[in-house]
Every structure is written in C-alpha cells, then in structure tokens.
Amino acid sequence: MKTRAWATSAADQLLAPFEIDRREVGPLDVQIEILFSGICHSDIHQARGEWGNSRFPMVPGHEIVGRVTAVGARVTKLKVGELAGVGCMVDSCRTCAPCGQGDEQFCQAGPAFTYNSTEMDRKTPTYGGYSRQVVVTEHFTLKIPAGLALQGTAPLLCAGITTYSPLRQWNCKKGDRVGVVGLGGLGHMAVKLAAAMGAEVTMLSTSRSKEADAARLGATSFALTSEKSTFKTLAGRFDLLIDTVSAPHDLNSYLGLLRPYGAMAIVGVPPKLEMHPFSLINGNRRLSGSSIGGIRETQEMLEFCAQHQIVADVEVIPAEKINMAYERMLKNDVRYRFVIDAATI
Ligand code: NAP
Ligand code: ZN
Ligand code: ZN
Image (tube, rainbow, N blue to C red; front, side, top):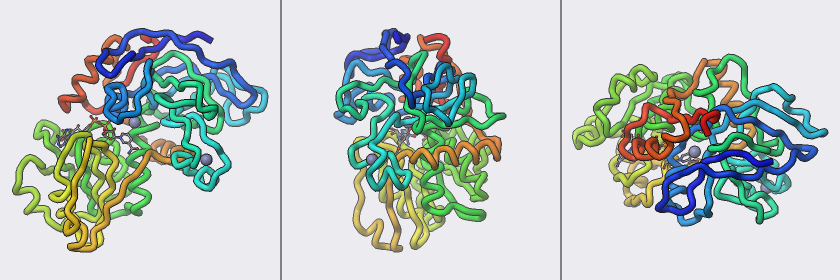
C-alpha cells in the first residue's frame, strides 16, 4: 500500500514529501491510520547523521497515535476503529531472554526500531511516523486508554516511557527529591510523572524563561544550571536525577547534587559525556542509563497517565513546518513537544 510520508534523503538535507510502501496486512498485523506523530530530539540526531548509523531515505517518527483501519485474522489485541499507539520499536525476536522478560528494547538479535532500522529480516527498511499509515505486528502496538487528548498522547510513546522507566527503576516515591535536568520533551514528561508519583521535583534548566512553566508542570522549585552557585546551594540534595539534556554538559557538577547513594539516570544523548571517578566514589553515587522501555511497561505507563490525567504539552504543526520545528528545538524553543497533524502529511 502506497502512503504519503515526509523523509530526508541525506544528513545535510531538509525533510520533504515522499512516498513509501507499507506491507499488506498479515495475519498478526495491525494497520493504523496515523492521526498524530510527535517529534523527538532523537529524530533530529538521526536525520542529521549524529549517531553514525543513519540510513537514507529516512522517515523519522516514533511517537505515533492513530486509528486501526484493518487487522489480520489472528489479531486479538485491537479491533478496527479502536485507537492504537506505536513507539520506538516495531518488532523483535520474541524468543531471547530480554524479549521474554518484556525488555524487547534489549533483544539480543537487535529489535526492529520504528525507523532508521530494518524489519527482523534485516533487509526491509523501516519507516516511521511522519506518514499517513503504518502496519505493525500486534505485539508492538499499544492500547490507548480512553479519556486522554490524542495530540498529547503521541509523545507518551517515547518521551513518556523514556522518563517513566528510570523513575520506576529507581523506585521514585512520595517525598523523594527528584531533579530533572533539561526542560524539553523528555524533561517536561519527567516533571509531570515524578510529581504524580509523589516526588518533590526540582527543575534544573538553562532557560530562566521556563521557570513559570516548570511550576505549572509540577516542579516545586527551579534552579538555573547556567549559574555556578546552583551547584553549591543544591549540593548533596537529590535522591534521583533524570538527565534529559541533548547537548554537551558537565556531568561531574550534576553528580555533586546527589546525596550519598543517590542515583543519576542518563536518558539524553549528547555526543559525549565525561566523568571523573571521584564524582561517583565520593558519596557512593550511582550513574545509570535508561533506554526507552519494553512494551509491557509502556502499556503500564499509558494506564498510569490515564489514571493521573497526564499528557504532553504540545504544539500541533502541519507537516510543512517539520524543518522549522527542528530549528526551534535546537534553540531550546519548544513548549514542550511538537506534534505533526498527520492529515497534513
Ligand atoms: P528537547 O525537547 O530538545 O529537550 C532537550 C533540553 O535539553 C532542552 O529543552 C534544554 O532544556 C536542554 N539543553 C539543550 N541544550 C543544552 C545545553 N547545552 N546545556 C544544558 N541543557 C541543554 O529534546 P528531547 O526530545 O527531550 O530529547 C532529549 C534527549 O534525549 C535527546 O538527546 C534524545 O535523543 C534523547 N532521547 C533518549 C531516549 C532514550 O531511550 N534514552 C529516548 C528519547 C530521547 P533547558 O532549556 O531547560 O535547559
Ligand atoms: Zn524518542
Ligand atoms: Zn529478542
């Protein structure tokens, strides 16, 4: 099935209209008419070749919400007419140990990512959510709980799960002091989710102009990381830091903000991060990373968001503004996720 999309043909090119072919619906497949597709900073990193693994043409997009238009004969999870979501993965081997534990993102064969990847045949390229239709095997679809605004739900499929998962891994709970570093797409979800888990959230940002927003999103305090004094005033304060920053920054200063045995989870992907061993040794501090989340945990996150009425704060744009959205994100000018209205693709 031919479908419209927006693609880039090389790391130094802009995105432009493009046509792709989606496979016919197989017995376990779900065909989804995409309604909204979020723009993640990972789309920019990959569209611009910053991770060294880019394949072109590339149709980015892994924050997909849409309506089911066809299902294969053996599909039980979704019915035609229901809402469905797709996140960062569209398949995995389903037999290895991580797949068995619900960590499909760590599939030993390598998952099929939603774009800039291949299907499990390791030949067929995958194309992402900046398109009108997608066909995905049912295991990798998500059920969208009733009562959530759809525009704001799309970003939950990456920004939501990527911040929910480390909060759960580090057992974020009532009264914990959580610092969120960087107030963009991931950062604003981290603030909302940690606040809903009962944590006392501090926003650590380079943008003074975002202070009022941080409070509205659920942060009880705000500190400017561009001011050196912040790192003295808040030294040893936090149980957990979630680092969402996409650009180089000094890890050592942030680690100093943790209490002894406190943990920092890195989710942002700057080109590199450097750390001195004493930043961890002093205070037995823990440094960890976190990669999106498995399908079971993503569904759990969606239910949590429905229960707490959490969606992303979005600016809905037509497809012709994708390139402008990329430029604005690079200037920290996003409040707090761009979402493409797929009808304009
Ligand atoms: P985003 O919306 O562009 O937000 C990034 C934020 O980082 C900015 O809003 C800004 O916040 C802060 N920032 C930017 N430059 C900075 C600098 N030089 N120093 C300090 N802070 C700076 O990006 P996003 O979509 O949230 O993605 C963030 C990162 O997470 C990206 O690298 C992305 O690839 C990565 N990611 C990882 C995963 C995973 O599985 N681990 C999943 C999705 C995305 P302030 O204005 O508040 O400072
Ligand atoms: Zn993403
Ligand atoms: Zn596997």
